[in-house]
Image 1 (cartoon, helix red, strand yellow):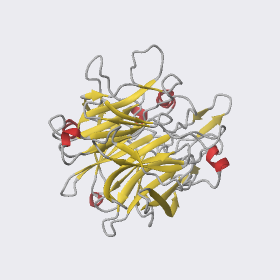
Image 2 (cartoon, helix red, strand yellow; image 1 turned 90 degrees about the horizontal axis):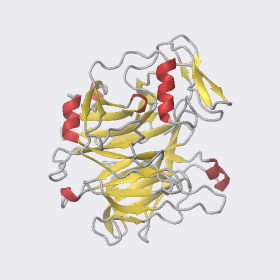
Image 3 (cartoon, one colour; image 1 turned 30 degrees about the horizontal axis):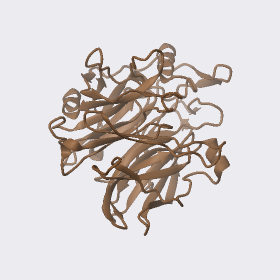
Length: 428
């Protein structure tokens, strides 16, 4: 999550500032609502809470017993959390330390899964994580009933930084950030697509099994998205940010059917790109704030927005965050995007032949006085498959960036579990 118009402040402040300062186009006329069925225990981003901050989830389906499936989720400096379908913690995996006392510590940003990755000892499902702190990928084998917890680190010790040339660059933290995985059906090779923090670069990394049972990776190619944009009035626009920062990508997902990458450039919109990072990226939707000028004030560490020229989209409010797919066997389904600035989720048609047209929107709202909804959502993951009696129509897991912790003034985050069937009803 990157906050552009209120740098290093809360996303909630960003949303309030935008609503007060920018004249936005009209929102969708009808926004449905769904209620969560469960939530994880709050995570606290302070020393007492282990610097844990909920960020991004992935859903692993246990094909042998779907009711015993798992959710793997990142907690930034708090590492990884694994939850069962009742949202109870099954395992906590710490992020690794930095190599030296003054070096950046591990910080797990995004997570995605690869099913049936070919390892030296056979195929296995793995979770792939972007370690922003150390600028590396971390790979964990998933064994549901293994003693000590289902995740085992099988990252090759020789794995190199993704974007940085040395430790000094790693400490500068222009490092591995957003992440999505995919397997090329024509070759059987598996990849991670990784974005760079505070930059527009995206890298394609092939996952490589080593003879000793670990997993390494190699860079195949990179692509740079634009950082400035020509507006219809002939002027050039660059999203306002701290000096030296470019409009980054975090939320990403790859459609396994045709190898299409959808990438959310947080202050710009959603791009459609070939997952092999070939061809020309297409901007399929813009945020409402697209084209709005801003001036960064170093004293307040905020961007003061100017007049809205009216070139933005009508459905997404910056930041564009978690992207996930609801897939159907006939190729239909939805691309879901977290519109973080107004606490909604926007649904687009999954099919490229229909140009990913807008289908609907919804919010995750409170189910009770003790089970609240989702605000300023970062990561999201959907799985359209039966998961036992709890989620017979599938599951949507969304990050909640502002939980009600019931613990004084401590800030808390977590994840909400939502019946996917109710989500599809809300979209329709």
